[in-house]
Image 1 (cartoon, rainbow, N blue to C red):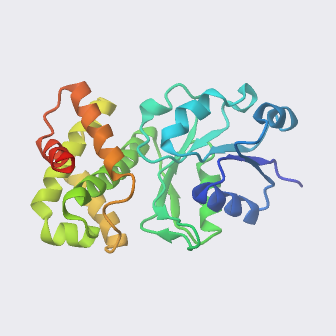
Image 2: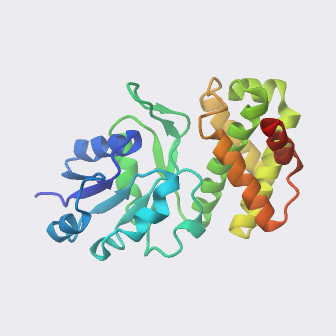
Length: 255
């Protein structure tokens, strides 16, 4: 029996990994690039198994606005810095927090299993497992919310801390733990404001450290670090948060 098609919107490094996993499972995959007539494709494929939105976080909302109505209820999201407010207007989405690194010309490098939630979460898990990338389904929207915040705390904390100390996550924690905790607490303040929830900070830090252990040599500061800092400061301003450590780092990077 033929399997229903899967649409992948955005065939960068991440989209390509998932596309390969879907094909390994026997699904036909249809890519959407900038040159694709997405409405024509939706007319040809009105009822796909899944529509994976694999664009970067900066273009997510614009991309969602242009998704054909036939595909509503079929969407899956994988972006960094994703929170429930970003997809509250979407009908029953599937969400995954991606914990593997994929760079051009290199194999995928997992840190910890990638958690997924939603109607097609098991399909995403199976696709990654088919490529020997660990992944798991979580049981509830609340559990997924925590997982998304963990990823945000990890990526924003390490990126912003790296603007001051550089290096890798293992060195960050070994030599600059107090500083890293200060950055993380500012980041958690922002995450709590964005989600209108409070979290067990010890649990968030412990989960971040588990990800550190997955690759102690993971570099702190990616090329997105300055933009992440600017975004964090903008959120802090919007919510009236003091975030003293983030603001000190911002001052340093401007001087």
